[in-house]
Image (cartoon, rainbow, N blue to C red):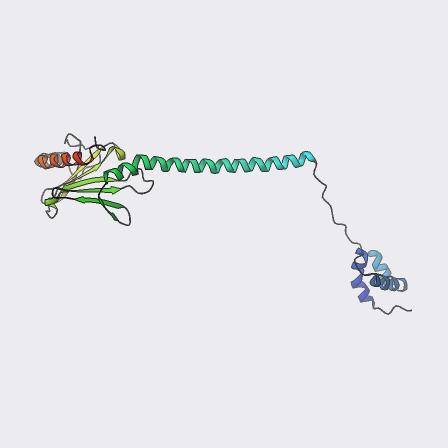
Length: 235
């Protein structure tokens, strides 16, 4: 029986025939056509199917080396993560011990107010207004204690004593004094001496010393009230 399949159909089937992935019936039809058609037979001889390259299996030594490198990288990353976690935990513990808990003790029994940038704790009694600004999370330089006399709350000449205790930066004191024209923030020592080294003054030293001397009695009263309230932290 003469093969009536057209050449273009055989050309389409040649790759399947060469790879031997066609059915037995298709194989017979292609071979019958190739036996009768010289053109398709020449084309079939030219068609080659590239062999899929096979990677050479790694040796046992190479396998151990690759596994070893992966294990080393894994151990390195684990050590880095452990170190970072330990460092973060240590910073948290230090902040809690050196900053948060001492300020929390200073604010014991006070009413808390949350603002956008800080937390204020306040105690108001007939004699003094006590205030604690809590340090922000992991903020080692923040936090302030301050007070003034309650009866002077609405007085433009109210004197305010601010304390940056040793748990912040070595017991720095600042008193706010109004001379009738403007307010001055004056750095002082525990002995009520002017301390220009604490931070830059707003005016000349003699002006500050004069204001300090004129208001010494009230400042001493505030210092004593602060000592009575927070003595353990501002020794």
